[in-house]
Image 1: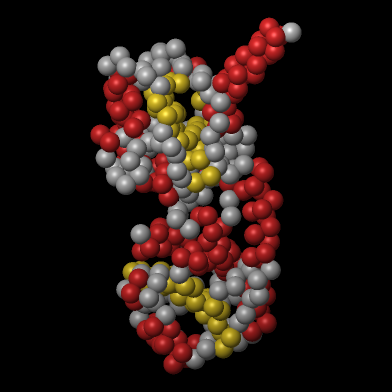
Image 2: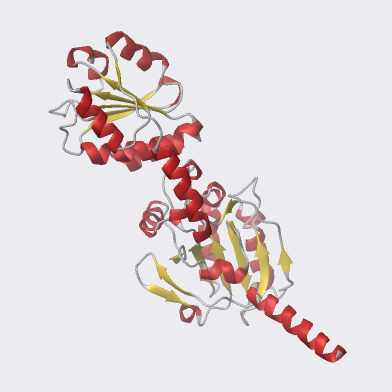
Length: 354
């Protein structure tokens, strides 16, 4: 009986070790080049590194430079570093995106790959979290290193959180260099970052988004004097003034993009003023309510917008839609007419706050 108990306990321990990633996890995930990247792609690599990384995670972003440098070092030593995004983008609450211009969707991963010039496979595991579950990870960024026998010998942070761009201080880099010198002693470090969002978090995200969608939408009249006041004193934090009409070609698309952006960044202090150039308050309200836009919304007569006209680009042949962006401390940054470049606005907001 005692022997059976011992064997049973040993089986539990071995199974637990397998589940939590002592071996290289099986990989079959979509790469940003749209091809399926599998464990077979790693055949011939002496060492394999895996980093769980998130677009919207502020700490992940801080280590971008070091990750790229380590990827180059791996490649030069006949090894491979693979970066995997484990987040279900539908489970992210808008407020959690306030430190990133991008979410964790596959398309946003492609955008980050291009803008940051990633030099490694960047794989999407947002629906099933197969790799992060296998490795027992709940946080990004999280690094793992496997030897030639595909056994785990490093599990932990990428590097020094206070000096993220210092490659020489990177725990992952040092473990790799030690392995090349013949020392594969197991090492584990504490991990700090952003929690991995799974399907279990979708209900909470939907609840928050639904609550945001039920916020009261208001529309008030504004005159030249009040507009001038807002332009002078309402731009201490990053601020957008958006001049529009219901007849604008991209009206609905623009208002929806602004609504999403406002709800993401408002808790960091982002300000949004929409100014409708239309005599029908009812038409304007319908547009704002359809976009669930709960920012500071105003309706204004065309003769009252002179304070904004100096920001209309000289190349523009029309007044609306006009987007004017101010950085911190009342600093004018840019303006444009026509369809919103919402990605530029998000990047500019992040830059100003950082």
